[in-house]
Length: 146
Length: 128
Image (cartoon, rainbow over the protein chains, first blue to last red):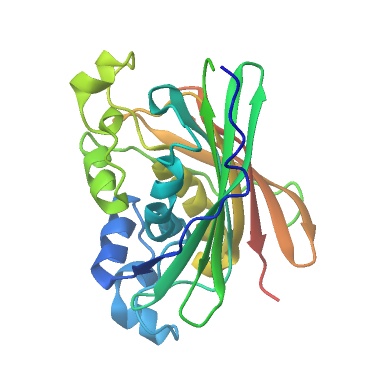
């Protein structure tokens, strides 16, 4: 079945995520962080931050929900039963801290067939309440046996 | 940090229930990570690690080497094979080049002799 590339360029409505102190701590502990900036409010404030600092990979928490509508879009047509997460990239701007509100917009970058596999590439662009770009993610999903 | 320098190695062993805690922390409840029976039904050896948890270990190796979370400006990885709970994971990296105050690091995550993250590249901002 040929891949449909109709969704390439499509952009989804932004989704706002409110960053919570305990969510940062829960995430930091789950990934084994020992850095006090992520766990200890007093340490974060001593270092000049308003609250605990999100680890860079916390980007998956605030940008992940915005990926949903794109991944489940029938026009994109991802077959989840044959899908693997092939690659991931993040570029980071200013650090995110508890209390920030992060708005993420997702778009479809490309849909291509290579060697019998479908490569679906999405971009998530996340900005904070001041308009700074805090993270840009490139998500590559591979569907086997198309 | 100079070209050719090795990053301090990061070693960690995800415990039996790590994937459950990470599912809750990240919001990724795909049953291949948390349900042993389901994972086996779809042909996996058992529950597998979240690729993005493993990527977070690669990120930790960079931020520890760079002196904090502010230092990591970019990380790109490819996921290969699958990570398993209760097996030690090792993250290694070598500085490929330094330009304009940024170290470009080539880094991998390995478990049981298999690279589960490969061809990864990080950019670490160096102190001025």
